[in-house]
Length: 302
Image (tube, rainbow, N blue to C red; front, top):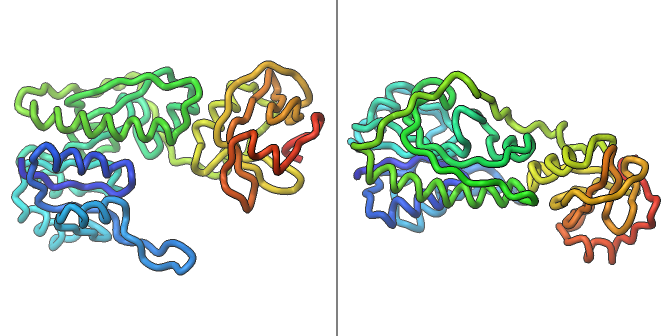
């Protein structure tokens, strides 16, 4: 098929690579414009932009698709289908209608659960047992279009958002290749109204740990916000990010260090297995404790 690909972050790169490997003709790649980054604030291309150039593909990065000129340029590509995954711009109706088979979105949830901006984070934070990807026919609403294909995977008990992100990215690449191969035979499934939930963008205010909560809730918060923005607490006046953990046995004052990096919660305890103190890189618990020994009875968060 002649495809226009629309994506921006790391999550989208394996999908682009899979489309190329499957032999589809990539008419153009659309992504977000380069942004200032790093200490020198030099403009840095997005991960999709960089990979597309390595693959010798035409890259376009308009700041908007609302103008008639950009819409005409998109239509002039004469594509069979647009594949959209974490692109970051709203697609006007003229863009949705331009490809022969419309625009297909790879969404990282089991729609209608977790429509919106942060489906991977929210699935872990809510304690969902499973998630997956949906290949959805795009329409004007937010993730409301009919589903053509869905793939389901379980969520591991110690899995972080980064872990699940990487698995879902690979699964999405597999699913879109299958969907394009089977496109004429796939029956669109209208999303039911029952079960609709919204994965609102993560607010940094959600990241501070409240140790009075039960351990299972704090466990989901830490894993769901890892690596970004990172759930955090305070240790000796410095911010301590908690990046990997598991629920553990133990009781004490909420926030109290029981042993090593096992910390008491409102109910039960959390064993932190990877952390990052302000001004340092991330470390496993053993390495962290060698440089930051914690006496039992130390209280975090104060």
